Structures are given as structure tokens and as C-alpha cells.
Length: 126
Image 1 (cartoon, one colour):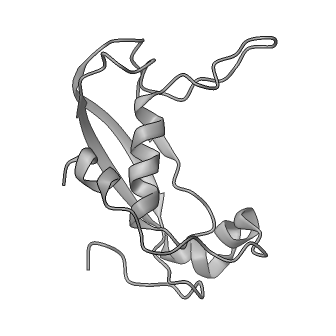
Image 2 (image 1 turned 135 degrees about the vertical axis):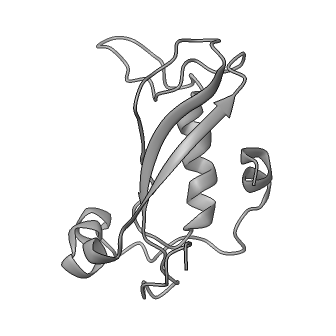
């Protein structure tokens, strides 16, 4: 499925209950045992992106609006796991600069599928 198709398919309902501590949930041994690591090979036209990885503002700098490939990819992945209290984090094996295209960037993401009540669901590969 192309990133554009995933971005266009919004989940019907919101995310997990606000009372859940996302970091504690992610660190829970039961959740840890159900994490699935997915390898990604990514191809993109970088004309409108400010690099592949999220930009961290330098002291006094403002890059909060700089769109990166990581931002778009994580937004698409969030729609695959809409009820997980912790948003997916993509880890790239390298980086590209502003405006650079790629035909084979690699990355990984750890995902746990769960329902609205945070019950663990089978991984996507089953």
C-alpha cells in the first residue's frame, strides 16, 4: 500500500484513553513481548521534504514546521495502530538532506496492535 493511500484512510475513532501512560504501557512486559519489528524499504521524491529524519530545533532555532519523510511515514503508521497509546517511531539507517530523493532508504519500526480497550491483537503478519 502506498503512503498516500494510508494517509487518506483515517481511522473512524480516536486513540486510546487519555489516562494511559504511553511510556509505561510500551515498557509493560506483556506489551514488550508482543512488539513486532518491521523492516521498511522506502522510496520517495524528496522535493517537498526537509530531509528524511525529523528535525530537532537548535537552541533559538525554529524547524517545527519543516516536513520530513519521517513525519509523513509516522503519521501513516499511526493510522495502522490508532488505539496504541504510543505513536510509532521510525528509526532510519541513514539520512538524506533537504530535497534529496531516495529509491532504497531502509528503516525499522516496532508496532503493537491493540483495540480500544488496549487488548493486544495479532501482529499484521498473521
